[in-house]
Image (spheres, rainbow, N blue to C red):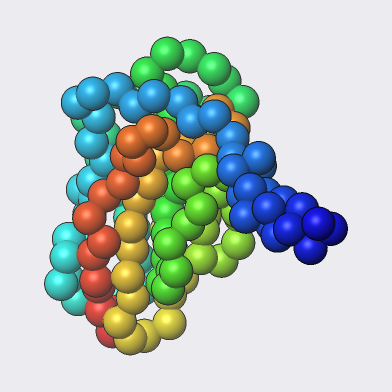
Length: 138
């Protein structure tokens, strides 16, 4: 019986820790203004974020139909959309409401993708995510 209870808890644990996600505005779209997919660029790389159908607000500010940008850089695995996005070299937060950044990337091929987070850094439901682009830094 103890083994069955432990197994049940392990199966159900991920569901117990999921955070309620903020509904996405129906027409929301995030995209790159620059660079574009397959661009070859010189470093440092200026990245400008585009957004339609919603507004930008700093992290911690709860206002209808707003969120803030997160930039996924060379991320190999998918983010857990039921938790706040982590902050590291591969998941960069723009919680001040920034809409562009400059990246110091080493020469070579890199992937970039944008994902919007709510006031708590949690992705919207459904996720507001750009296409993943590939750039080459010379």
